[in-house]
Image 1 (cartoon, one colour):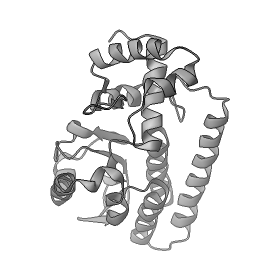
Image 2 (image 1 turned 45 degrees about the horizontal axis):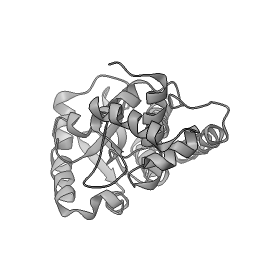
Image 3 (image 1 turned 45 degrees about the vertical axis):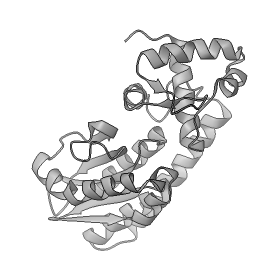
Length: 247
């Protein structure tokens, strides 16, 4: 895929602004950030749209990321920093501090439990509080879920069709995890990439870890495709690693 560095940076900014505001991102906002004219930004947006990385919802003047745009972003993340992000910027440093607080919160919740099942539940509950998503984990043959109400308060789920699609996905998630057994340490399924609930417009981010219950236990979150992927992926990865180390 032919994409310039500036187009990467614009895509990165659209994804991160949209994650924060849940509103389409316009050329005027981006023009101020990049120090160029709105017309220049619109031309770059047109190229990103032609590549299928962003889309214009309805008649809005702004753009939102597509599943393909999110996938490109996730594939190009470098550690805990988004691509196109200045590691020394105030925003990047604030995100690092937030991530450090989050990993500490998971550590406290996990290490305070004496039983393996309680530690796993504690890690899931911490992920719910830190991400605002639905948290999940396999404990033996059961799937532990927490934070359903938190998930459905997000603006994407004002549409009952989407709520029903997510409910259908959750009904089939535990048997799918057991049968498919995703093998990567961190697995990310974005929107239509989800093997079940392809039309639910959510992302499933799960970490595989070893536990007393199984060599293939999973912990993670399920939320709208509008995610702070860098932060959420780091928190889920950390939760899986910590559980495997402690258990």
